[in-house]
Length: 258
Image 1 (tube, rainbow, N blue to C red):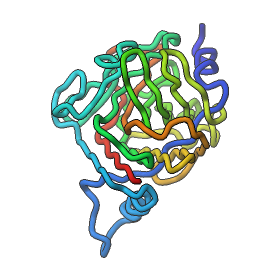
Image 2: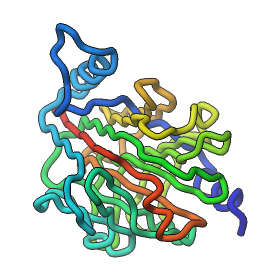
Image 3: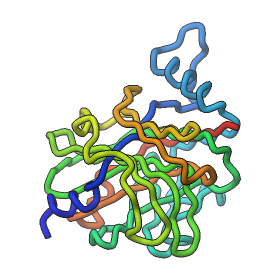
Image 4: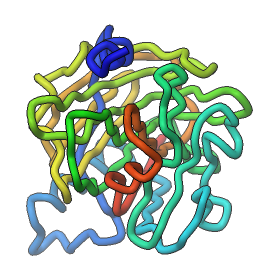
């Protein structure tokens, strides 16, 4: 089965609608002399009605990511998916997908989160190639339990040569059970991803939105989930375990509101 066929299976109905904007709360500057990026972050937080923020630069070597019990992983808890691992300054995946199974590496924050959620991360990417499928993902309103992941995935293929795509996907629970909420490669796949780009996703009411570097590229509407947590995921199809270190996130921030 070739790559184009696999991608058509994974993105056949409709792709992105959920990268939003960047909002690394720990490094916000003061309002008096702030950049456009910080103004965008403040605006996004106002929209979300931020109540519970969490930010990390991934300081430890962990597999799976824990940060003191703050993360729930797709392998350790979900069993059928992969864990997210970290080295200082980078979070990345552990699994290679057979497509099927679509066993993305995934992790979500523990605790109780309000329904209006925002997640943002900075992209790390080297050795880009269209020969394999590498995705970074933001997760919102997502719950991981044994043999079940339910929630919303905001999906970005990590290329910039015309093979890139974006999408918003609802995970329905069992492995390989998911529904596309946007068309395949919405916004023409967007501008692609480069090292240092910022991706962001928001879930405000029934509206799910995906952004790159503060620009909205996709939007979808769905009312299936209101609970769950923010998180992140990674997908590797056609590559090796070693390829997982070629892409990931260098930081991650999430917040919620009532």
